[in-house]
Image (tube, rainbow, N blue to C red; front, side, top):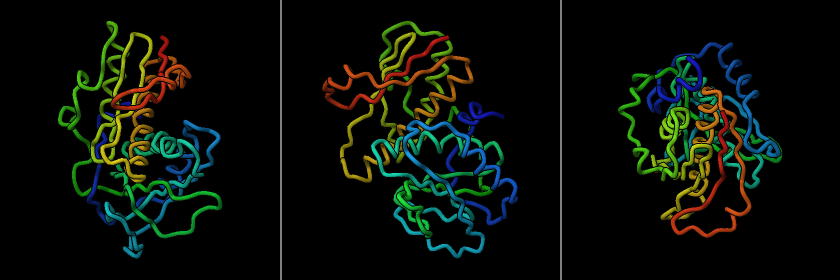
Length: 254
């Protein structure tokens, strides 16, 4: 199954078997990660896998998950670096799901190890073979319906509907789904919701979630053979919005 199909199958896994993943598969994961397109090419990033089969890693954090492996995402700390992290990591997690591995994003979790020069550990992912079911029925996903996420300004065709179905299933920190859309037949205006408690951690996790959602948008557009251009429009940035902030516009061309 491809990445688009995995969008509808992946679920977060929090309980793992302490079984070794083949060394070649670990190498394949990092090789795939190195080929994923980035949202912000100017931001330097790096990913490393930390093994914890012997449970000897002293993982710390409010939302830590005990796992046999962790994928750590390092990044330069520049504007939009967390959004870029989500955009790059989500295809990697979908790839891992297709290989039979369970995954879980870990916010505010510290994995021991030296950070690359000029970078910080932005986010970590717990992974391994799951104790529970790996795949889900998309109908059971606890997500807001599209009518609550979108304002439709045009009649839209099946390709755009299918893109929005994939976008709706994007995972987010604490399942906040911090995105809203104004939808036309050929473009989608993307907004992020304001945080009720705008702490640095919560804003960072919102940005990560927005990047994951944009990744679903890109993967779905590619699957449906639509040309996608994500662009920040200057005139939209200048406007003030009561309950959120403009992020970007997705232009969709068949």
